[in-house]
Every structure is written in structure tokens, then in C-alpha cells.
Length: 231
Image (cartoon, rainbow, N blue to C red):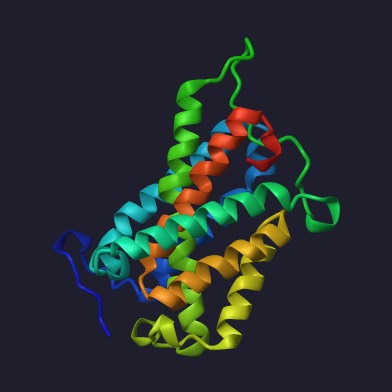
């Protein structure tokens, strides 16, 4: 199945797999490069830079994401369910932080948006929120749910109905999503929740909405409590 082409895309011939994997791969590659970049750049701008770079790539590839561009509008009930799941994942996320529920760098200094005088650096906070709410959910849902969940079952994944996803695909996607996060148990809950939405509703927009609600609430909670570990 071919995706709609746009004249300004030229003759790149980008595959459906590439356009859904590339933004996620870029984001992960920039995380891996962060220790090296920290020798020359402020850590905050490294974090913001990777989010903005990923957002720019998503914008360039946007015509390819028909599961977001052309999907039916969510109905009121689907909006309500998506928002409720996002809230539930947020609550789980801030409580599942005991040592045995974490690995990697959790607990180290997180993203600190404070200015030199101890006040919030509002432009930095605004950019961080924009990335968390508008870029990360789109990037992750395109990779984990739209691509990987369906690709595990069918290599021609665009033809696969997410509502018929196998137990293997659901379990593998949720476990790998958990492994991506320092709060692995919270990540497992989140991965299972967002995947269940996609399987139950069959519309990727529901996952993006839910993920954005979680991230927005989490960002507000972090700023209110100044517990930068979660950033």
C-alpha cells in the first residue's frame, strides 16, 4: 500500500517504515550523544535541541502519517476514555518510583528549568512543555503503536488492523516501551495502557491524546513540586 505523495517531497521514495522509525531513532541517537555534547553545550539546551530536531523531522514527514492526518475524528466517548487513561497513567507514573521499580539514571539530576536567581526560566519551561505535549507523544506513538505493534504481526503493517493485534505484539510492544524508560514499571503500565487504547479504539489519535494528557499533567506536577527527577 502506497502513501500519498506531495510534490514538495521530491523523489525521496521514503518507505512507510523509515518515516515512522526515523524520528524515534533520531531522538534516541541524540540522547546517546548527550554526554559528549555536554562538554560544549548547556545540558538544558541539549535536551530542548533534541526535542526540537525531532519535531522538525516530524513536520517534514507529516504528509506520510495518514493514520493521524486522515483518521476519523474521535467521538466524545473516545475523547473521554483517552483523557481518563492519560490521567490514570500520570497518577501511576508519579507513584511507581521506588528503587526496585527503576533502573538507569533515574534519581540523578533531571532537567532543571531554574534561572540563576532560582526563578523559573519561563521560555525554557514553555519549550519543554511544547516538546513533552506536542512532539514526544506523536513521535513515540508513531513508532511504538502505529509501526511496531502492527509490524510484529504483519510486515505490510499499514494493512494491519490494530484492533486485531496479537497477544505477542501487545506484550512485546509494552515490554519494550517499559525498557525505554528509567521508571520501567511505570513505563510498562503506560505502554500497556496506550496499546490497549489503540487496540480497543483502532485510532492512533486516541493514543496521542492520552499520551499528551499524561505528559502535560506530569510536566505541571514537576514544575509545581520541583521534583526534577521525573524530567
